[in-house]
Image (cartoon, rainbow, N blue to C red; front, side):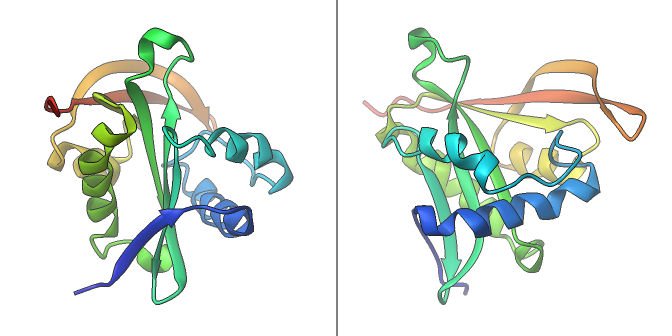
Length: 169
């Protein structure tokens, strides 16, 4: 049984977080970025995830950083404070081991303590592994933005998956 542990990301983790993110860029499956990003360019994003209700977690195993999960505000208006987008990125050596499923389950379980009642995933329509991961966790397709992204000249759909969490009261 893996010994995965989550913790709040620190500034020292940012280079590894960016490296994991950048490792997904060439696949054209996970991010709309078409070129690698820099640590400097992610400073504002990192700062936005230092609030307790919008954490950035890293997951480790025996001291090795294997991936990260972020809760990002949806639409930036107060009425949406109970809704957050969940993003999961895994190091190449950690993919296919069940870590994504475990991390998403942790997010679902712990989300109510963050004041969340709804989780969203924004996933490309051709990213079948991520769509399957979120579907297994109970997410449903709530929206389809057809052909809104162009990756290497190919138009791609963006699906919005949602999960309403059970009342925690």
